Length: 199
Image (cartoon, rainbow, N blue to C red):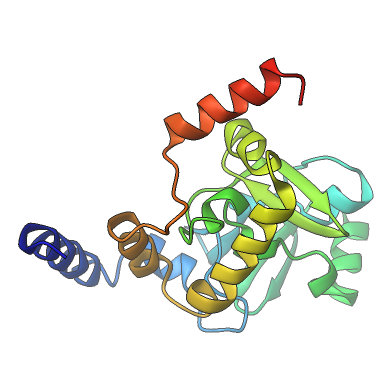
């Protein structure tokens, strides 16, 4: 690693550590088994998953639905909201059946070992599991080679991300990129080429 790259990495690491009490860092890195997560701090809900999206609705209704604060449950110190009492009851009975994979982070980002983003309204169920994406462009890029990207995401989640600190991992992999890294522009061009060829 070049001296200036090492220096930049150390400065980013120090800045990240200095923000240790930051609400977002705390919200995304609970101490339970389901960590890190795409959560925000909100009022009394120290960790609100996917900004309150109803995770059961994806499976039951086949759509994104915002949850209602009056239908809330806690799982592994994370608050989940639901659109109805019925959805809350379903989650309470079997929470792991409805958890988003990779902590609700963008599955395409996880394929590059970067826990980043994840828009609750851009999603897909694959083999009975919920995957969130950071927008339609990310989902399209992931779908260019879904099986390969799913395998990469699972590998990096298990080997680097799961149980770790999302901010430190993000900084690390933005500086030291995975061998197959592609920029957003490169991915957009690949998606455009695939669409033009009818794939």
